[in-house]
Image (tube, rainbow, N blue to C red; front, side, top):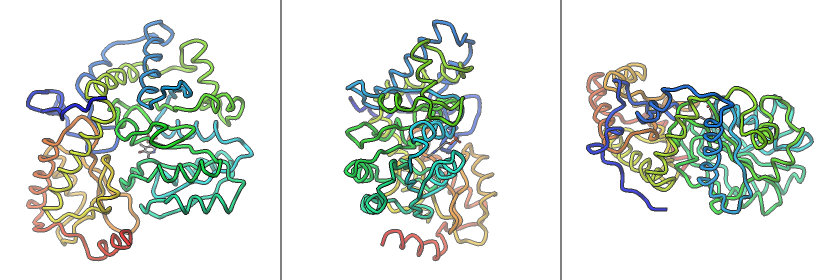
Length: 402
Ligand SMILES: *Cc1c(COP(=O)(O)O)cnc(C)c1O
């Protein structure tokens, strides 16, 4: 796979600005999409028609190739709904009713997994690392050694609530060296962070249309080992979220069981085409990392500090502490940034005031330079001369580094 040079906005209109006068969405999905992706939705499709069935087949094949399934051991099952629907489908379909899960939590999405298992009535235990500390291989191993009845470990790849990229390789090694199975919520990483079996082993991985592939919201997809798909027959708690049933029906008929989001699928195929044209996972990862590096360097020059040290910063979204300055108000900062064409994202920490800036979507480092300029101007308008965070926030961060 060749890594394309970053797309130059002066030669690529699609990256220059979202047309139609929209602001950039510096949020982790829905995100800023290419004009071509939006334009692909300007026609109607019959869900049963051969043309649309071919689109569904192409989507599944392309996603399997992104997951690096050369051996043909996996299959891809798209599922209607937002990403959480696919996570719930994965949990209910692959964890046996008498199974037991260990959920690794370090933020809102890990918590949602445990909450989902409670709804499903699946027995589970957790390792809760708080807002953002990474779960590490040795502690996962120790938990598995202590409880042989744990059959599955469930982990979030990039925990979007803090922006931490969790160490999947060491976690997966700890799981499989003890003969257990791994299920991954890679919602905000798949397509930009490598996730093949040689990167880390897993039984199933989930993502959705509106994250790093840069489509619009409307469905998720599960990529799972075929033997797990077969074993899932009759296991799901839910008719509509039964992955085996969706898989089986799709393989037999080429259709989705219930009304598919036809326009979203058409947009997603265009997004997949652009993903491949850019150079696939590697090139997309390069662009997002450059977005992050340019944005973080600029924000640090203004005095902002990141919650996480460089080692844990994902190329997906970055959490910044709110400045200590008495004139700083996040709501006002948000409005001033929006006036300048940028939608940012509130923080999700319990310990310190924070906000987040996403690096994903149809934008490049030139856009990120303008984000930093907009932040500088917005601070000036608020009468904030430095964005340095409160010392308590920095002490909290030091605890992470220790
Ligand atoms: C976006 C996201 C989800 C799914 O959220 P929805 O709102 O249901 O689309 C799940 N996990 C992670 C890590 C995410 O980033």
